[in-house]
Amino acid sequence: MRWRRRSFRAMPTHPDLGADERPAVRFRFEGREVVAREGQSVGAALLADGVDILTRSFKFHRPRGYTCGAGACGNCLLTVDGLPSVPSCVTPVAPGLEVRRERGWPSVDVDVLAGADLVSRWFPAGFQFRYFRQHPRAGHAFERVLGLLAGGGKHLPPAASAPVLPIARRTCSVVVVGAGPSGLAAALAASDAGADVVLVEEQERLGGRLRAETATVSALGLTAPGPRLAEVLTERVARDPGITLLRGSALGWYEDGVLPVAGRDALHELVPHVVVEATGSYEAPVLFAGNDRPGVLLAGAISRLFHVERVRPGRRYVVVACDDRGIEHAIELHHLGVEVVAVVDQRGADEAGTERLRALAGRGIEHLAGARPVRSHGRRRVRGLTVRTGDGRRLRLRCDTVSVAGPLRPSEGLSLQRRYQGENRLSAETPGQDLSARAPVLLRVGGSAGRTRVQDAVDDGFDAGRTAATAVGNVAPFRPA
Ligand code: FES
Image 1 (spheres, protein in one colour):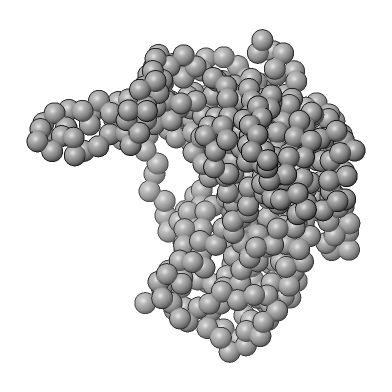
Image 2 (cartoon, rainbow, N blue to C red; image 1 turned 60 degrees about the vertical axis):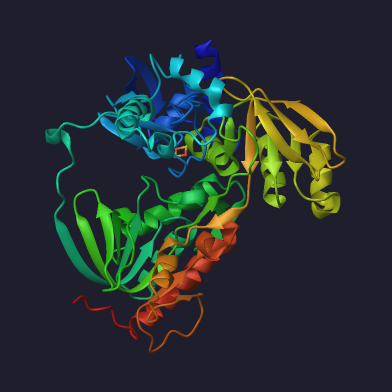
C-alpha cells in the first residue's frame, strides 16, 4: 500500500516547472531507508513516502500530520539526529539523517494511549490541579504519570546539549529581517543605493512565497514565474558585495537598539540604523471540528508542497475559502491535475464575482456560497468533510484532503514588540515616507504590512529598500549602554 501512495504523491514532473532533477538523498526513518530529493524538508519527504501521522496530540493522542509547512503549528515535531521536537516541515533532509517520531505507545501508528480520546467528552479541560487540592501527594504522582503520557522526545544527555554560542556584535546601516519577496527586493534596493545591508533568514532557501507563486512576477526588468524570479533574486543577493546573508532567527529589537540573531555559529548582536521588517504573514486556520486531523492542510502549505517540495498531498480536495484567494487556489489545484470536489465559500453568493464563479464552473468545481465546514471525518487521515450550506442543509463531501485558505495575518512581531514596550523613539512607518532627521526607524513591508499579492510585496520591498538607504544618513543607531 505504501509504495502505491508514494508513487502518487511524489511528483517526478510538474506541469509548469518540468522534471524534478534534484539528486536523491537517503535518510533513515525509524529503522528503514527513505529516499528524498535534495532540498526537500523531512516532513514533506515523509508525506511523499506515505507517512500521514507525524505525531500525536498531548492530551488525547489524536493523530497529527503535516499542516502549515511553515514551522508554526507544531504538528510535525520529530526527533532528528537525537534532537527532540524539531519542526520537520522546515528541516531539510541530509544524507544519513536519523529521524523518528516521539509520542504514542507502543508506537505512533498503533497508539494504545489514543484510547484516552474515547473518554475525552468527560474530561474536556484535561488535567485540573484543583482536583488534587486536598491530596497534594496524589497530585504530584499523577503529574509524573501525565508527564510520561504527554511528553515528547527524551532529555538529551548533558554532553549532547548545544554548545554555548559566542557573541558577535556588529553595527550596520540596514537590517532586513526575512528573505521572502519583499525582503529580497528591499535588501537589493538598499544595497544598490549604497547601504551596508544584513539580510536575516532562517530558512534554507531564500524567496519565501515567491517560490510557490505560479503567476508571473516582475522585478529588475525581468518578468517570470515566481520560482524563476526567486532564483534570480537569490543569485543577485549572493553576488552583491553590499549584502551579508545571515542565517538565523531574529529574536527581537531591544531598548538599547540591539537586534539579536540566533545564528548557527554565534549569537549576532546587530546594531542597525534602520530595520526592514519583511517577515511575511501567517495563514490563520478556520475553526471546525477536526480541523487538525492529518489531511487538513493550510492552502499555503499545499502550494508549497506542489511547487517547492514536489509532493502531492492527496487526490480529492475540498477547499475552504473566505476570500478570492481560496477560489484562485482551487483553480490552481485543478491546473495541477488533481480533483477539486468543491469550494466551501464562507461568503455570500454575490461576493465572489461572476468571472471567478464562471472559472470554477468551467472546471466542474462546485461553489457552495455561504457554506461553513462543520466537521472532518476519518480515523488516521481525512476521508470526508461535513459542511452546512447557505440554505441550512448538511452535506458530506468525500475527499482525502481539505485545503483551508483562511485569512492572512501579518507577522509583525518586531514592530508590536516595540510598541508594547512604549518605545517612542521608534515607529512603524510605511515605505516612501520622509524619514529625515528621525531616530532609528523600522519599516514594515510585504506580507507583514498586509500585502497579500506577491507582486505588491516585491514592489513594496524595492520602495522600502530605497527609503531605508536614504534614511541611513539621517538617523543614528541606538548606542548600547
Ligand atoms: S510546524 Fe510543521 S507542519 Fe506546522
